[in-house]
Amino acid sequence: MLYTEYSFSMDIRILHIDMDAFFASVEQVKNPSLKGKPVIVGGKKEDRRGVVSTASYEARKFGVHSAMPLAQAKKLCPHGIYLRGSHGEYSRYSKIIQRILLQVTPLVQMASIDEAYLDISGSIRLFGSEDNVAAYIKNTIMEETQLPCTVGISSCKLVSKVASANGKPDGYVNVAEGSEAAYLAPFLVGELPGAGPKICEKLNRIGILTVGDLAGYSQEPLKRQFGAMAVSLQKAANGIGSSKVTLEREAKSISRETTFPKDVGDWGYLEQMISYLRERVMHSLRHDGLEAKTVVLKVRYGDFTTKTFSKTLPESTSLDRVVEEVSKALMKKGQESSKRVRLIGIGVTQLVHNQHQLSIFDEAGNEKWERATQSIDELRERFGFDAIRSAKTSTLGKGVTLSTPSLSK
Image (tube, rainbow, N blue to C red; front, side, top):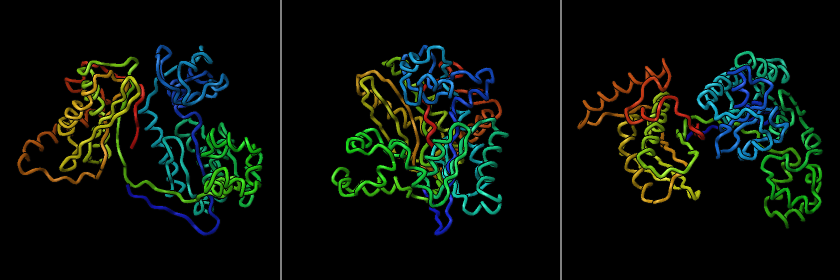
């Protein structure tokens, strides 16, 4: 992975954008009848397992939130609309949003599928003001996607993230240069990014409840409690943080995985599912013009033990048949355990742009497979992924639903 970091010595202004209830909002755009209703993305109501990925603001009124077990969400909001999600659509909308952000500045760091940091220092003069930059982003995203978002602007990532979190939903908060500490002071310490429950508990124990309390606390007692972390804690409380925007130049990995409603012991079925996941991975790999050198199989057993098995190829590839052979060998390793399987997934790493040379011993065979693969990809681009499937995965039926699909790229 190649990174470039940008920072400037004066007048740095960092914008943080966070899409509001992103997955649920996309579902409401796709199906307008869901607007104004409690939508919970993460699994169907009848699913016995799973966690909430996103809850609409209507569902949040009942206490439902991300990472909550579905079982608990159903108790809090039994009348909610429960969906497994359309992860391909979420990725598509994320790319539209990223394209809009790049119209403002090339200095865009996608922190996740639904949030990003932008260094807008060089864009303010073009738009006339920081408020105009924020308005352009919010209005353009709304016009092109019908999705709401919240924007925070300050001199560093940390304060901008806090600002956007507290401006939700569909809000905008601008923290002026020099007022960062005053802005943060009233918030509870748990509002600081990275301040987890255990740290907050320790801080509360010594009388530190708010960010302002932490900012003004004597550093020596803090050092006794937190060691070297004391300095970074107080810097954060005073609104001092990184303003470096890191650009991810190349994909690190591509993977797909799914959790089963019930633990599975049928390795014939598991092999079918891995074949389907592999087809998804390889289609995405070729779509991005990439090849992979390492194949990784992930297996989580019924007792929550998770193991990964990997193999590095002699040369990078984008051909399904090559990765299929490797995945079969890795499946045998995963099957050595007699435990039933809760989750299974496959991924590829060590990605490079398509630059391979055909083996002189199998040139004709590889050329044939490449032509066939290209035809398949073209059909899928036109008619959808399920327009053509291998014999092995067709028995799974059309429209296979992955309960926890990975979108790592």
